[in-house]
Length: 621
Image (cartoon, rainbow, N blue to C red; front, side, top):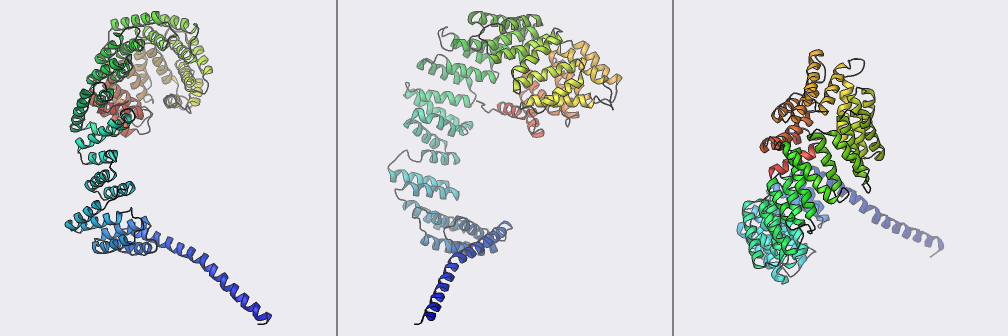
């Protein structure tokens, strides 16, 4: 062979080799692109209900990629929608023979499912029983099989798979959570709780919280509750030294809001474990939230009866004071003697433990509030707070809270500029923080009271971007109120009258405030302050404890001016009045629900949802 022939053969061989390599690289890409096109088209046919076309395309794709779960599910669902069960049966039998993973029995289970759809009930049962009989001592296979049964809504067979798996694996506690969930779906509460008790018996302390989370929804059912209560009582009586079951009973009673029974269990645990009252104090705090004040007092007293050396003696005493405070500030059921008694209680506590001990600083603030707002002695409150912040060891945050209160009570006593000074000090202490924003808002409100609308608005506009939603919302409302009632096209006189009324209302001079409110519409008809005037009349009625009148004013705002900026505020306050002061829980629940549905973006929506859930009966931890 001469050199030229050799070169020719070499080049030919090289070209063929290059072509083969190119085909190896390019053809799969083309095939992949073709698959992508067919997959997209098949999905479109499936979405539009053209199942004959989607079935044909998915069958082609499945033949090229038999392990692709997407193609398989979509193909089988297309046949099911066509009711072409015979084709589905034939193809499923082929797939079971091609199956690579011996742990995967979904094709066999789907074959039984197709038998059921095709009214071949005997064949379906035989197929499913065959699957259960053929299970091996392989945890993965058992889990996969049960999951496939669940996918086809065959809970009973999923249960059989797990139960057979227990025997095969020789583990009586295997698949406890999975079985419990399946029993729950079947409303077989007896067996469900038996599974959870088995988990609890094995590891009482580690599993307790997990088991509670799983059971939380089920125990809202009366039948389930009674079954679990009997189980726990039986175990608690059989094992009196095991506090886990007594603690579970306490938890169960709390879920059902049977707080007295929860108290009995908590008291037993506390005594046996020498807890010093911790569980009792925590329960009393929850009971106070649900406004069962008599029981909360009883629980706190049981801790106090343990003696001053008990670790939670002081929190229990504070708790009793907090109940009295809540009764006065959040309900209509108090008298002047109740206020006097609470003031005496605060003074006694502070005399015993000082003003720096624990949360005593908060008690100083509440004592000052009682003096200023309920005894109408702002100067006494001011002297108390000045003495408090002059002491040593007072936390910075408590100093700031005290100065905010000093600003408020200085306003009440007529010392306007002293009030502004205190607010400014707090603003400087917590610049660009929520506490500072609160101080800035109160200072802006002060300038609004005194008629300096330009400065007040400039401060409010800064606060509209506050990270504290309520502050931002209040700032926006007051800024808008100023904007709508000042400027070239409007006179400031109605707004000045309103600001005067607002200031007088703040100082509890209600008769004078109402004279100003009456004069706004009579002197300046057609102004834009109607809803604001109604809100202030509601505030005055509330402070005078005329709660029905207050509700009527709020109701008029959210029904007549519901689309304005005060609509959600009025609705929330109306609901709160019904809940806490008029004691109409169904009405309050209805109003909270209305707020949640009507004002989804309201800053009050989250709190309204929490209160709605509590009134509905949910336990809010």
